[in-house]
Image (spheres, rainbow, N blue to C red):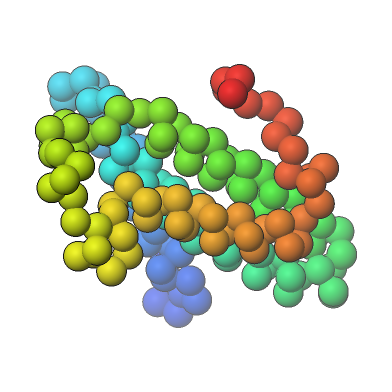
Length: 154
């Protein structure tokens, strides 16, 4: 059990996000419930959004930590890079999963992405990934970005 947070907690939203992920993990692993359904695209999209938000937070923490504490800043920068690699793998897994059955049954002529301000739902993860990728490529070398291990060969 986690200790209660003090009333003067400086990071309540970060603690709430962590608690939400712990709750979600526990709900997937409940032995008394039916077996969990396989992961779907919507699940990976939400996880990708969480990882990109965490990626931005780590970038800011590394930037502000580096001048007074260079060694700690380097570790945060390394975590930032590894998180980007994890985010890339989530994005790749998203595209390897089959579409939603509702999406499969819809015809391409019935799709009206112009009605959605952010474009078709399947592209929001790609837009988010490209925007985050643009930022990390400005601050990281290609050698740092090279994946050290991957689950599949492309």
